[in-house]
Image 1 (cartoon, rainbow, N blue to C red):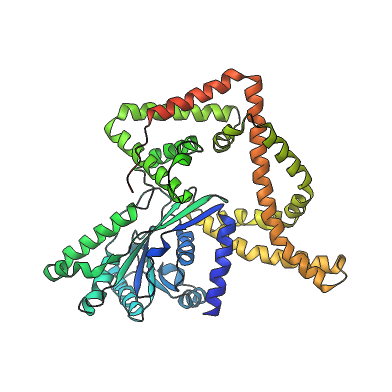
Image 2 (cartoon, rainbow, N blue to C red):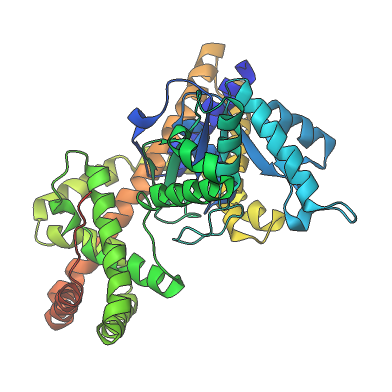
Length: 449
């Protein structure tokens, strides 16, 4: 248990460094104790497991694909983490049916729940990086209802729907929002189950899908997803900041959810207007690219265009703190660079890159901290406490360097934007007009939540 807690806290630190914003909403919906099932959508492979684990205080078991258990050492480690192998059709050995293997996984899940355990299951079965919920398999419902049947539905088991929304699944310093919906009570399905177990499984699976979709930002295809991401940056600093919600992160999420919903409705109800919107957004993005303006920073810095005081203060701050940034850069550049180089060598599946970068970074950064502290002790420090203090300063220097680079990028964007504004007012006004036209083409319907 001590090792598990240590690993969980280590992963938690890594996640808060990897993501610029990490919000968990709906923790009040988590049951106080097991047994219960945590059902999570699955767009980002191992990263989904990490985020699921830190979202709940309880220790969780989870299902993992069978090939991960083939190396004996990995099998031991996964077993210690309470992982249960699940066999997909492509994992079944020759002459060994998938159904037989899944029965074994099914029994292990029930046994784990009988011990008042909490188990995390990804009901989609497979992981793909896309903004949609794929087919929800019936496994979660079958396990939950079988557990309830064994207890004559007197001790029903709850299913906790957890929806993970990434702004950019594989990008360092992106945002993620985890929404925990109200749990589903299997006891409510007793009467249906008594008449037909099959109908009960289908009904429970349908409710699980609805509960997950309520907390996800969904697009129908990759074209809509691309359009949504461009529109999200265009609306940045405008509509979403006017959303009346005491919790800003959740308010922004609800607006973005409504934005995606409006895109889907427009595509179905008015294809011509949708195509015009696509063309306008594409033209707007191309103009920004021609001017070498980042579309996210362009919209974020637009309100500060005439704020000379902000520009002066930020410039002085960056100049004065440059030595500290340089120190952090020199001590972190290698462990920061290596995970991005190693991950594609391990797999060409982009869905695994973010989680691999995280795991490799968690290993490499402490190693390099020890190396730098040792070198400092050998060549510079006169006392051991000085080396220890230097070691403690290294992660703080790394966090400051990341903050410095983000502020520098924002300042550079503002300076470039002011240059465009001063030298070519017409180009700037064209961009503003194009943005206004886009906002008119798509009226976001704010959904009641």
